[in-house]
Image 1 (cartoon, one colour):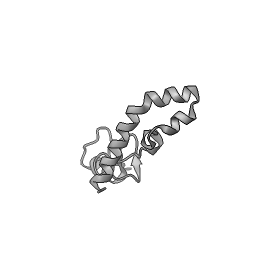
Image 2 (image 1 turned 90 degrees about the vertical axis):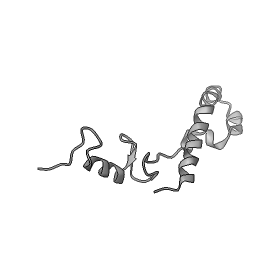
Image 3 (image 1 turned 60 degrees about the vertical axis):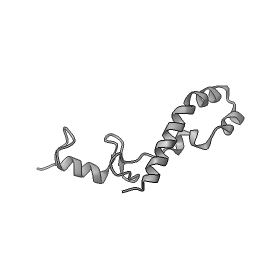
Image 4 (image 1 turned 90 degrees about the horizontal axis):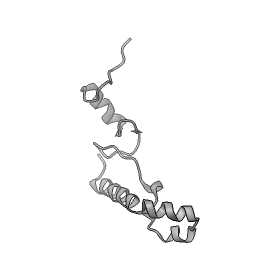
Length: 89
């Protein structure tokens, strides 16, 4: 499991992106790159990392289910994800 500080840092980044989204769009439309560079670094959506909602793991992240492959497998086998079953043929 990821450290809680990493998870909290990611939440903070997401909030900052939301806060400055309108300002960034306006500055980009004006092509005011000097103004964009004065915004906080974490206002850029590129700096946000997709993390598993359960464990906080950032590698092997499945966007559709918002969790890592390990948590996805565990949840699917326990029947917690509707419509997902183990393949058998």
